[in-house]
Each structure stands twice: as structure tokens, then as C-alpha cells.
Length: 90
Image 1 (cartoon, rainbow, N blue to C red):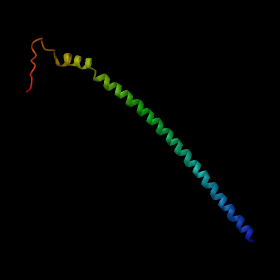
Image 2 (tube, rainbow, N blue to C red):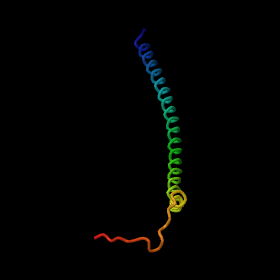
Image 3 (cartoon, one colour):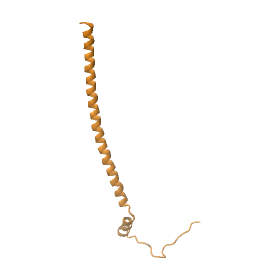
Image 4 (tube, rainbow, N blue to C red):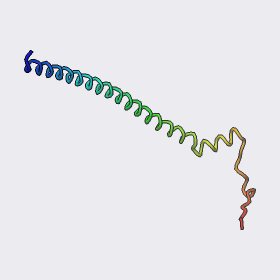
């Protein structure tokens, strides 16, 4: 074999290895992109759920609901006028 044919074989090997590396990099890139999309969907779903939970919490803690529960479930009533005393601390 002449020097030119050895060089050609080496260059052909380098080209094949380079092509395989490109294919592998593209495959990894696509796999990571699919994973990124799944994570973004999860993040959006969690943000939506977080907003719903905040709304639910604010609904459960409304003044009217607390007052109604105190009246109906705990039999609590507002004191009669004059029955409350104001204590002034020194």
C-alpha cells in the first residue's frame, strides 16, 4: 500500500467516526428536547394547580365562611351590646 492509500483510509475512518458522533449528538439532542417539553408541561400543570389551591385557600378563609361556621358549628354569637368590656393596659 502506498502512503496515499493509507492516508485515504485514515481520513475515511475519521469521516465515519465523525458521522457517527453527529448522529449520536442529534439523538441525544432530540431526547433532551423531548424531556424538556415533558418538564415544561409538568411545570405548567403545577402552576395551574398552585393557582387553584391558592384560590381554594382564599375561599376557605373568607370572613363570611368563618363567621357562619362559628355560628352554626360552635354556637358562637356576638355579645350583647354593653356585655363587652374594653380593658386598657397601662
